[in-house]
Length: 313
Image (cartoon, rainbow, N blue to C red; front, top):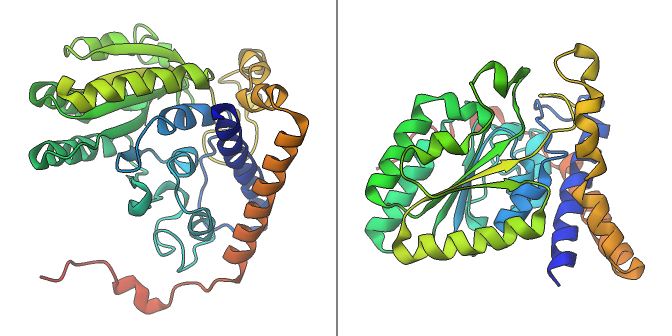
């Protein structure tokens, strides 16, 4: 059942990040982390509607996207630890997760940079006449980058097979969207390029899944790109593991409705108790194995600095 699938993926992402947050103060995790807690359902709802051959590009807040698309959990945790068996050989850390076999073609610490990369990949798919599509994830801050506007314009002109997914959590680091833009409505900016747009509740995982399936079918059939604005909210600080309401740029009262509408808790309540316990036990075992694997794996040798630097002809 879809509800069980959704819950297993959501619970996996939530618990992996909670475990990473627990370990983070020990300094075993060598990479800065931007946690997805609170935003997980956007990635899960969209990725559950994609095919295996479809690909995704993400932001530095990429744990949820990586896992939702089927990225290797052991390689992800090893990457957080900076180990050579990590998905980027210990060189990328939390913000640069990649798993081509699962269709995760990369994330970046620089705002907006994966948007033109995703468009380029979509152009290649069109030239090759492949049935796959691209889903490109980015935050509301990226909408203010020139690359965003150039990419949307090009994608619409060329009718490229790409779904743009804006995870609008209302903040670019500590700046609320209304201090940076005249309105909080991102879809109006996208609409100006003649692209079909839709705004979604990012916590409505079933609705987002249905909408993505419909959009993906249209894109796959040559209809050109589409744009989703998914309203969501991060629970932790911009980078790190703590809450940050004491800093004054946002309030706990603002966040409370998002906590009350937590899709992980809501889905858990909908499942049969035995089903839920079986899912949770399975997930917890995977997490234990993955963190034990990362602890035991070696760090890269110094010689690894010279690997993957140049492409040999």
